[in-house]
Length: 227
Image (cartoon, rainbow, N blue to C red; front, side, top):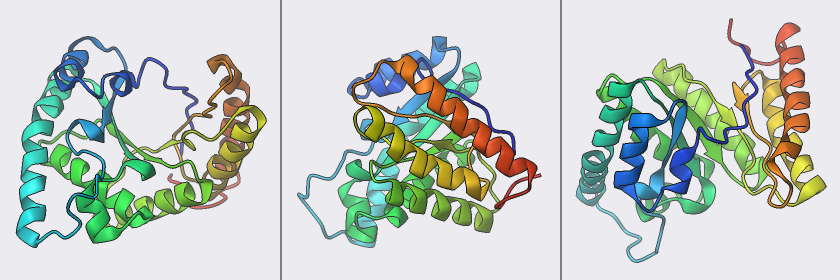
């Protein structure tokens, strides 16, 4: 496993454009790195308007998502752009909540719905991110994601981070717990330490330390490390 340090400033440009889907598609034409696919663009967060879905209802929503999502995938494929497929624990849709609850299982299934569309279009240039402010939920979601990828025979990189971890030292501690645990498992390709208050450059030192921890774990073949 190769651990690459990246803080994802310009890369997740899409996160700043989540209310403007056309702008997000346009971003794919000029962004030089990765653009973030925020699921609220095509799969709105739960509003609890309808909590019971039939199989037909579920399939209909998947078809609607695909219609909206496909043009972005095609743009990224055309211009050779990478994409971040990120599920936010606090922003799951009514459909996911009704079937899987507010759970790591629901987070993984939400990400897989979009990944299946990408694979259907032969687009594989994406990274998974399981976003949660609770490091325990975050760790569970990534572990389950990797287990499900193994079953499917998939192999996509993971971007690790505890979203909205907190202010200053608290944020760094929560990030270290979540990210460090997964790195010790041998899981993770890029990392980001989130802080709600500190300047972005303050993230660099803890990120570097965590990346070094991951490298050491891989060198001693600790955890489940890819060749």
